[in-house]
Image (cartoon, rainbow, N blue to C red; front, side, top):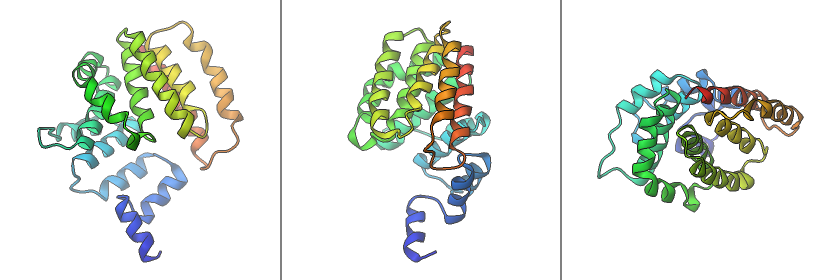
Length: 221
């Protein structure tokens, strides 16, 4: 590997070996642990990123431990605050503490809307909108859920080449609302995942199929 490539990996907070795991296996426990090991003393933003990865692989205890070590204060920068509140709300929702999560959204909504709505975060805002739309739906705020879902759809239309994220997010919202329509949407989305033929990595189809199955858990919030 050339010097330039090494520099690029370092700037990205990863290494050739760790990136190889991701390319072959995606966001799996082996990758998350290897990425975490590269950051033995992570800064606040990196802590949020690592906690988010642990949430993605359902290791909620580890995500919680990291979040507990973070202090957001007056001197915290926008990226630290924006990422922290997103990951914390997602953590609280996934651990069935939706009332605590929605209280954060109510308190920080104006700030978060500005932060995640800025052009610099356009490629990454879909996950935030999915989180708060699902959370709002679970708490009975259907209008707010629809508002954030529309924002997510707009972002996904530009940056989700598969076209699969919006249907799965809509399913999350339906299950969170305990809608009787939710179960009927599973098979059409599964067929859409199976029919898509332009996955860039060998693990991508399984990733979307897992997201589809995970949607059902939001009915238990």
